[in-house]
Structure formats: C-alpha cells, structure tokens
Amino acid sequence: MNIEQLDGGKLIVIIFKFAFAFFCLLHLLFVLYVVRQVINLDNLLSTLRRSPIIIFGFIHAIILIIILIFICILPQ
Amino acid sequence: MAEKLKKHCIIKDPKNKWLYWFLGMINIYPENAKFATQNVDEEIVIILRKHISKNFSWVITSIFLFLLPIIVVGIFGLYDHNVNGDALLNSDFIKNINPSYYFGVLLFLYSFIVTYIYFNFIHWYFDLFIITNERYISIDFNILKGRMITDIPLTDIIDISEKVFGFFPTIIGYGDIEFKTTSEKISIIEKAPQTVWIRDALSDLIRYIRRIKVIKSKGGDQAGIIINRARENESHINKEKMTALAGEVMAEQRKNNVRNNKKNNILEP
Image (cartoon, rainbow over all chains, first blue to last red; front, top):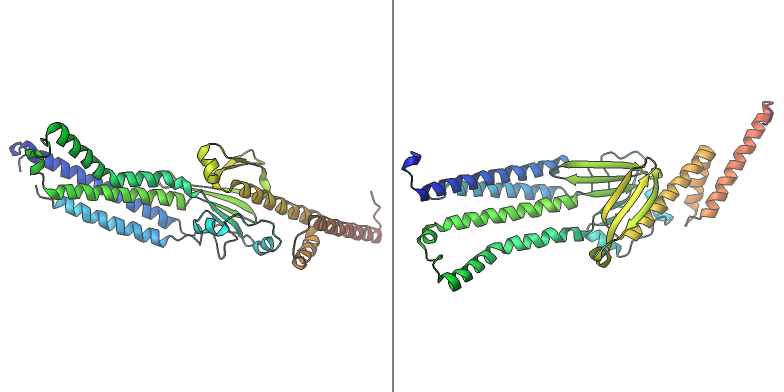
C-alpha cells in the first residue's frame, strides 16, 4: 500500500496502532525482565515466596501478548 | 545459637509481634530460614522489611490510575455538555472511532497499572534486612538499578542511632536506624518499623556477641565450653554470673600456666 494514497484518518490509525503495539512490546519485555530478576533471586532467603510472584508475572506476560495480538487485529 | 538467644531472652519480643509478622515487617527467630551465604554456625535472628506504610503512596497512585478513565470521561462529558453543547461527543471524529479501540486503550492502561503494582510490590518485598548471630545483611533490591548487598559483622558496629522525623513517621511509627561501623561506614535501615525495639535488640545482640567473643579470646576454648555448659543449665542469662565465670576460667588458666612454668623451670616475668 502506497502511503501517499492514504488519507489522514487512516495514517493516524496506522501510527496509533504501531505506537500502541511498540509500547505493548516494550511493556512485555519489561515484565519478562522483572520476572527474570525475581528468578535470579534464588537462595536469597528460603522463607521468601517467589513462586506466586513468578507465576503472576508470567500470567501478566501472557495477557500482554494477548493485548499485542488484539492491537494487531484491530480494524483499520 | 538462635535457640540459646531465645532461651536466654537476649532479644525481647516486639510489640504486636504477630501483627508485624503477618504484615511481613518483622520476623524474629524465623524457623527453617536459610540464605545463600550462610555460614555453618550462623543462624538468622531477625528479618526486617521496610514499614508497610512505604507502600501507601503507590497504592493511592494505583487507585487514582484505576479511576482515571472514569474521571477523564466524566470531566470531558460535563465540559462538553455544559460548555460545547455536546459538540465534541456528537462529532464525526468521535463517532467514527471503532469501540474496540477504546477497549484496547483501557486494556493497555490497566495492564500498565498491574505492572506498576507488581513492580512496587517486588521492590518492597525483596528489600530485606537480615540480622544473624554473626552479621547484618542489607539487601537493597532495585529492579532497574540491580541489587546491592551489604554485609557487616555485628562486632564491627560501634554506634546505633534512631531517627524519627516528621509528621507521618511519628504518627504511624517508623523511622531510620543508622549505624556506624569501625571502618567509618554508615549503614541505614530506612523506614524501619518499631525503631526503638530494633535499636534495643541490635545493641543487646551486639553486646552479647562481643562479650562471648572477648571471653572466648581471653579464656580460650575451655572458657567457651564452660560458659556454654553454664548457659545450658541457666534459664536466664545473668551478666554478673557470666563475668564471674569468665574470671574464674581465666584465673584457672593462669594457675595452670604458673604450674606448667614451674614444671618447666621457667621464671615468672
């Protein structure tokens, strides 16, 4: 699709979707980075309950992937 | 060692012990607690976290962010209705936007709020202060910067001070515990709960550890064994008895030395 053929509204939608998807991806990477940091805290203290925090982080990451897919399939 | 400390009441229980334990702020003599760099005879005596009120700011921010869409729509709706005569909400631009876009933006906002809560909770939860029978360990966990672990032997701590400044610390009951070490290093437990108790417990523990160290170094292993035996027999530690006992052990050792010297024909200096 030639960008010159697009009207202003469609261009805004594309930029919006692209920015939205980009920030969602950054967000996803950040959550995975935090989860990784928590996983790295192995043996820090045996009484710390890390597993619910890690599971929550992974569930959140999955939700973010679903949001990313949702953004990609949004109508033009 | 922790059992002995507990038995001899070296550290008193804090006020509302179970409430503070439930909120994760103070855990005294934790059972089966182990950490990565634990030595053979080392046992955890106290685990501290910053006061739970440290979380109030991000909880309030999260509630505000959660309600933000309602506030924004409400304010714009009112403004548009009263000032513009619904010109903005009835405009073609707004009407042409697919509703799924609103849904997407809302999903993104709420996922951001969840991450914000997750991030802040982890920051509080993994920021720990561990006091063992040998050392003080501070784990400053910052997700963005990384982690900084400070490890100070208890016998190196020379000066403990408590700082409770301001309205909220006085009302809620938290403050900073600051201590200097022999190497002039200053370490701070920020926003610590029950500052008076922590200062008292730390100084009592340090005094106890120092006394044991001095007695052991002067009287040798024999003194340590005798003191341990005495401590096992006593239900409550008595400072005067301990000192007297150490004196007896040292005197006994001196006698033995004199006897050995006489045997070996060595003159006393």
